[in-house]
Every structure is written in C-alpha cells, then in structure tokens.
Image (cartoon, rainbow, N blue to C red; front, side):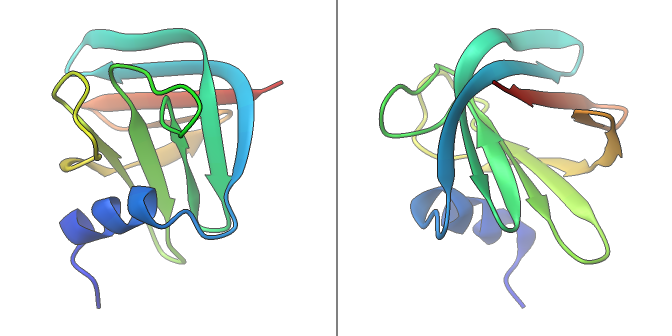
Length: 110
C-alpha cells in the first residue's frame, strides 16, 4: 500500500486519465482562504485537484484523493511549491465541497 503522503506526490505527478476543466474553486486551510474564484480543475477517476495544472497553476493548490473507504486532502502549503505534500486529513463530502475541521476544498466545474 502506498503511504498517503507519497500518494499526493503521485497524484499530481501522474495524472492518469485526468481531464482539465476551468471552474470556480475554494481552498481554506486553518481558517485562512487561499483560493476563491476561477481556477484550473484536474479531474481523474480517483480524485481531483484545484489550482494545479500545466496551463495555469495557482500559487496554492490542493488535491482530493478518493479511495473506496475514505477521502483525503493534500495541499502545497508553500506558495508556488510544485507538489501537494502537506496532508489535510480525511475529508467528508458536503455538496461540491470536501471538508473537515481543518480544511475546506470546493470545486464547481463550468
């Protein structure tokens, strides 16, 4: 089994079957908002990322990895870092957002 921290690196490094879309994104971590508005959304069979991508990368971005029994979030945490290496923990879906006590990651594809 791949450790969750390593999985975040794989998710952004190898976007198998990923589809790039433009949409509205929201990223809040520890009470601070890092993304709120238009951004690139990469969607794959096992999750998605917001603010990442080859065409236009935001200063901050996050990924949501969806497994059979749980969903986990990751983000870059450092402005302009190249990978989502910081864990945000297990997330629960609430509409177009995935949240926990620490983070909120939302996407709305246009």
